Length: 249
Ligand SMILES: Nc1ncnc2c1ncn2[C@@H]1O[C@H](COP(=O)(O)OP(=O)(O)OP(=O)(O)O)[C@@H](O)[C@H]1O
Image 1 (cartoon, rainbow, N blue to C red):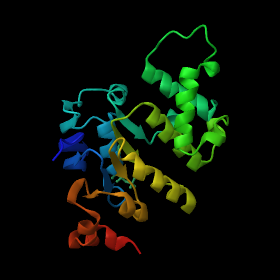
Image 2 (cartoon, rainbow, N blue to C red):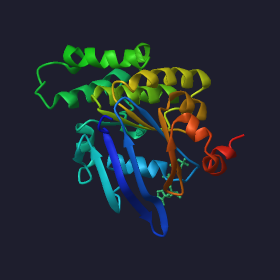
Image 3 (cartoon, rainbow, N blue to C red):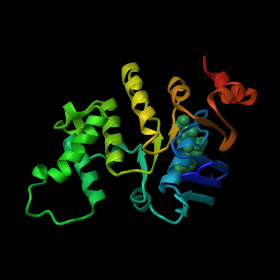
Image 4 (cartoon, protein in one colour):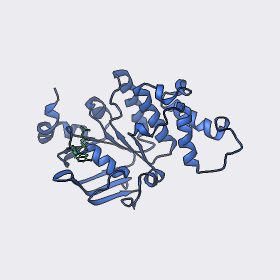
């Protein structure tokens, strides 16, 4: 089997007496969507933040592309290709959608000197940025300020920005949240293709999306993974049904 792109080994994080991450190990393999599901407060977001670098684990390893990235900050992990889309605050609200993606393209290209060219006419930035907006279905909204985009459109913009950074893996925390049925369907189709570009660790409460997309699912309950398996294995797992799926109407 191919080497995992991302490997979490025995990760632990407590907040006071609360074990938010209690010995979590999981792999993200090339080409897969690995969904992380679990009840509210199970520790999904805390786990994603530890992988992205925003929260420091108490112990454990995070191996990305064969390298232990545990000591690196958020920006250094992103530069190595750990793409994420869950920080709406990372958008510049007054800038257009296009300009937001151009900033990401520019940061990927490095800080070359561009003092003599008006940025919006710089084709080396506008063309790839426009291509990302087209891929995420946002091209017709390219000139709209991020602040005026709908919630769903902002999620699309975050993904366009993540794509522009050339990720080798994606961390997506509830991309379907706040999307209508049509938006969820479109995003599901988009993510389906994206896995071949970079595997995706997907935190999602929308079970239709999870069951449609996931190659594997890990179920997190009280900071521990109680099961990892295919959609069929997880649906048929008695403990999972009791701890989580059974709660769903
Ligand atoms: N900074 C913090 N300080 C103290 N407790 C925290 C902190 N962050 C998270 N927690 C607690 O850790 C536990 C896990 O929270 P987390 O947000 O990771 O869960 P989650 O699975 O993402 O939940 P949801 O599905 O509701 O988003 C919760 O009990 C939460 O209250």
